[in-house]
Length: 339
Image (cartoon, rainbow, N blue to C red; front, side, top):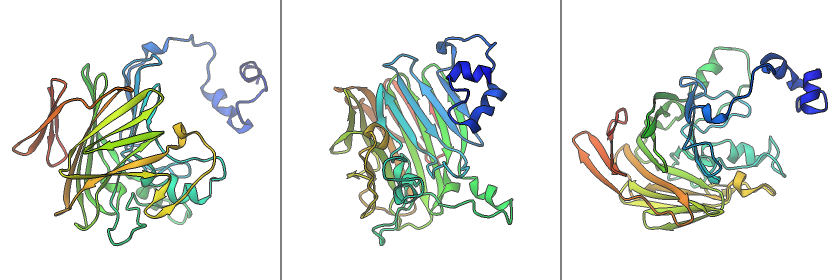
């Protein structure tokens, strides 16, 4: 406790019940090392928690990316497999919603919006005949110990199938289908083309061909949509997003914390944390069960523009050329190449 008192000045670590973390894991004899020695990219728990962190560097103006595709563990967990976040000095793509203010942990804002897929940068498949249907990942609770094997089986919601970190790119392939009742197959490819471009390719097959297929991007402050492009801006930085697939696409700005026509407002909070709204991208029309989404996101200062990119097909592959690189995505959603 003397060490805790020295470190925190009050003999405890934030809350008394958390003191054991420091008794178990904190070793003051280990010398400090500069954070620049840490890897710029790291995946944690590829078949469990499924989180990947990516950086262009460790300076205040460096790009920071986060991707999540793993299992659900209850309580503070969200139904958000496949989500991503983007930071360049300030947030540019956020995990929206707010615990504080008048929301409350068990309030409608958290229960009906914040913890659900609609509040994250993933995909949803609403029923077109139900205007308030979210269409997100399956929602379940740990409420019974009658069968201790049943709940862990439900928690198996997604996996990282492949992770690569190379000098020119970092790549993650996630399988999200187990998290949805309405997805037959759902593969998300997340590619960081260093130093400032993100490519996201989604291969989707739904169980009901009538379902809408909606790609989500949550912005912190403002967004401007023009044709098949939009720009999310925040404090002199921006993410310029181009939708290459589907063609044609419908792109819509939804302001606030909405699920269909229902809104779950919350007072207080910083938009850098809560977000201000989200962009929905979906096909103008749907035909059959399968849909592809392909987005190129360029991150930079206020004047950043979409990086020129060309799209083609080669047999069973979708081929993207960007920044002098060629990215190849298998139409089955399972394969990827970079050169």
